[in-house]
Image 1 (cartoon, one colour):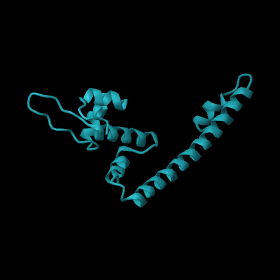
Image 2 (cartoon, rainbow, N blue to C red):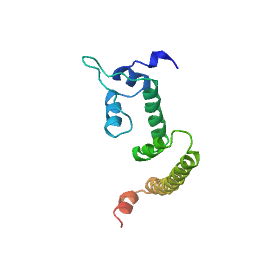
Image 3 (tube, one colour):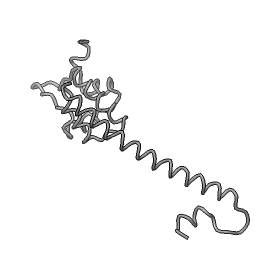
Length: 135
């Protein structure tokens, strides 16, 4: 493993992981990361494993996993729980597909309202406002 990642300050860890220091502290408070010991008169040092952990968390967040879901995935990270990890991903996929369907319905409704607004001329109520008011 690259030894340049074995003696990182929290600031360097944050920079390498492309997050800010408060993100790392937040992950520690949430139990997603441990806080290394602080030698007397020194600063805490982080290693490559910590960097991998932050990158894992950020990658999972980009895929839409919540911090609670990430906590569950981290419990499966030893590699012997592939079926459980796949089940978590399948649940997330079902959720994402449902959200996509909702977004497509919203898009169609908004597109229709925008078209109605563009077609209206004269002194009548705005179709968008009227629809939102339930009139």
